Length: 381
Ligand SMILES: [Zn+2]
Ligand SMILES: [Zn+2]
Image (tube, rainbow, N blue to C red; front, side, top):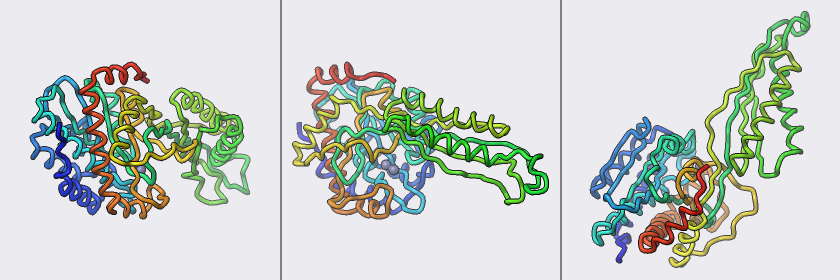
């Protein structure tokens, strides 16, 4: 089967450039989603918008065949630094794989359906959480996306994350004249912070707990009646994260008892840990190597963030390989990273990613045993 993707290069590069030049932050990706939808419609994809109520989300479909393969696109930028996470490359590679795969289905009469799913807001509370919970992936066999980085890594994990807001309520009073009449909400926050620091020694080393004080009183001569701390808690698996959350909450509950303050704990939805499908990742690795790309050694633990692809990987076999766009070390979420996303290597990564994803999809279609293996390995979480 001949893969027609080389000729898409000018189109994919211009899509990446246009998204780069018009950076839009989470859930405001109006121009980017419009551009991607229009490009896919020209290629005869049927496009549904407003997925799970997200205005800038979309689901594009071509074909009605048995094997259902989805490529994901992200396209949100970061405040102030624009595409410092290179989502312009993810979007372009996603539609590139989608369009080239559509041509394969069309010309070879493959028994397959291809989807390109537009996933907004990855840098905020990503839409893939709702997509995963509301069954968007329920009929899909495998999900693939790529992400730029300073190394090519195939099975990199992501940490499960939850956010917690501790709100302490006390009573104001003159801090010198009548301190005994006040209840100090700031003390609730400070003790929480210190309790968490005491907890750290007894946690697994993959746990990350990091927080800030977002409110700590109005003036030194007023006993603060309100104080607030905002924390992220992360771990490499969902189960351990749940255990940690209980302990971290207890740090605040203890602080509230000690200070006599009222405590409210608010929790965000967070992201689940990312469990790449080993079999699918191995096929992708074989294919990216066949394109002459060197795969880097996986990192020792460390350098891991969190992403809503985690939630996807808990409902459908998924991969999220990283593709190198720079020979120099790059910090994610930096201006240098943004520039690298439109460098020659940045443009090159679009084609490498799209090709490796298509070759992987083709392997699965041509060899049904592979899909069986992928599914046998998959554990819903
Ligand atoms: Zn990012
Ligand atoms: Zn990213």
